[in-house]
Length: 238
Image 1 (cartoon, rainbow, N blue to C red):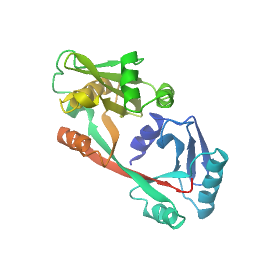
Image 2 (spheres, helix red, strand yellow):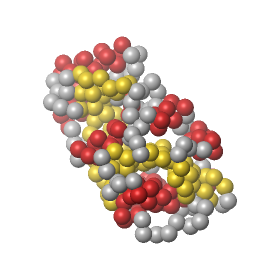
Image 3 (spheres, one colour):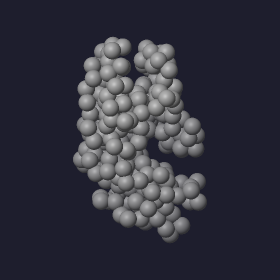
Image 4 (spheres, rainbow, N blue to C red):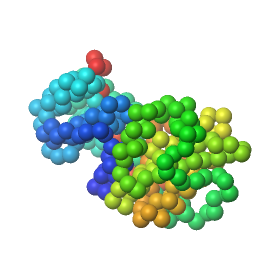
């Protein structure tokens, strides 16, 4: 990732605290998902730093977990030799906001609003995005907003967006299962892009599991391009 995208990646979905161990930052999120409970590279690292990370995470009674960029083959190889196993391969996609602001969004289809409504929290909850992730949203960088999506005359989708350094990151995109494949996620992205552009962001980005082929296909069709990718490496004994 370029520096601005990397900074936005962490600032818009922040851990509760971050500790420095050699060439790593070690995030502690008290829940909130893998990203805010992982170590990641911020500088030159040594094998002793990895041991320090493992010790700190064990002190927290937290799984030993690293977020490793796809291009960081030396770290991936070192962790593999120590018994870490990779999982949840993820792509980071981005697009210029101007590419998504040219189409008029159909009436009562997508809105930006903060704080999020109770119905959005219900949609997130149904998709496994609970109170710990809502807490991440509350401490995220400003400006920030939520996106409410509607289809078939009912609330059907929710997403969270925040901006850091001119980059808007979209998180926690959820559309109710029975209302998917109706184009709603695309309109929600366009609403996010409009809000981002109005608040000074020139780029819109998001992270998508590589196994989520429907989402990847949608975003690529909209013009998103891959900027980076990563996997989590975790000790199975944890």
